[in-house]
Length: 155
Image 1 (cartoon, rainbow, N blue to C red):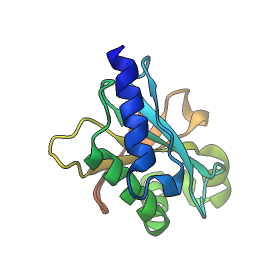
Image 2 (image 1 turned 120 degrees about the vertical axis):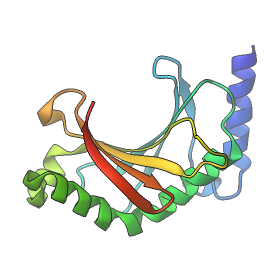
Image 3 (image 1 turned 90 degrees about the vertical axis):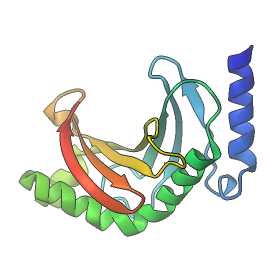
């Protein structure tokens, strides 16, 4: 019963938290992946998908207000950060300099928060899959607030 109560509390927090209702984020918990998930639209996406998945990794306890606030800030920053994200991707993998390859071979953009080292949380990553390179292959761009830290590729 506690897990159901945690889900209801988290949904209420998301629904009534200022700014969250603007983006219609409806989180659900995936017990197999140990994460909360939601989806939202991103404007001006250079990828084939204009939807971005939001993932908050952790146990099933209610999401914290600082995690929800960071998600809202990141979603708001994406239009500003997208040129930098594309630049980092194309610098990291020269094949992606071709906009057609970038658009056709990259899929499932995600904003990911892991259990934070600090409270309030400021670290997040933008990940995007490249299915043509393997089933679980993707690029991971790590940020602290709006500051890019590093990019790496792998599972």
